[in-house]
Image 1: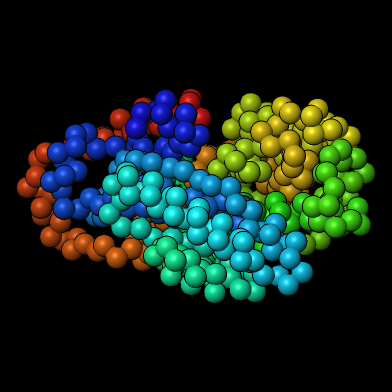
Image 2: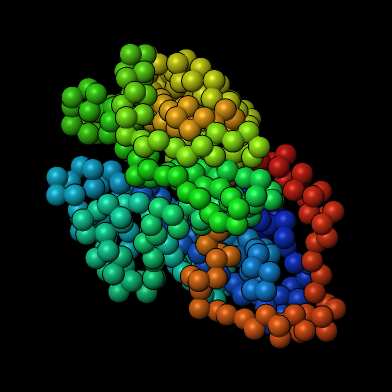
Length: 377
């Protein structure tokens, strides 16, 4: 898959800079496996198919990425019983089967999945995943906040090509967010079961009307400022490291409903400040959905920007850089405990040493390619 093809499909990962030179190397090397990583999120169900080096635990080549919008969080929020309905379960099964077929077409040899916030909070979350496994064969593990943060962190390291001890990674979806860093040999995670759909529900609460019962826009300036206060009240105190100036804050997420993409695309840059987000939000107030057509997702523009600004301000984040990922699939691909395929590292290292046909990118090549690809993003 070339750069143009990746961009056309709407998804692209810098992990593709680790592509092996030559198909014969992949076919002959016992340490490379083609994996399909599934991320069943609150707003989208995603898959990434990639060749993975089992010794180095890194992505060599992205073969395919796709996502299907499916707002499970909204489905639960509008159900008084707090359950995922039979309709939602059937829709999820259809989405998984479609992505499984795509994975098969792109040569997936094994698959694994993770499930995030909605399956922690829906009353029948675990039962739904059991049903999905029975109906589709896909096993998806419900991650606690801490592990979801770790997988997101791995995704950010994969796509940003930055040292892990220099990063603070922020992953925000439809139902929760995690901010993760690596301190003194261990992962630290700050997160809340509150994200874009939660913020949208809060706006309806401010208006004292039923969730989803009326158009979102226009949103008045007063409503936007009240929404910021309402969101802030949902959060616990963050740890001091979230405001560290010694680390770079990297935000990850897809382009469909990502709060980061909302700001980055509209501002025309991947790195932006808290003040720029607030100004963008204020300029969007009192406008109709049609007048906000310059946003990627005008329906939820102000809600996304309100959440983005509030978390930045609450956590002392002055500036961040956005990297587009396909959920947390990139991190899942290289996290060994979720996969059946294992390797005898000592034996494979000996085998690799005797096999001169394996040609990987040099460090200088990776830097050059990373810089070139960053320009496309």
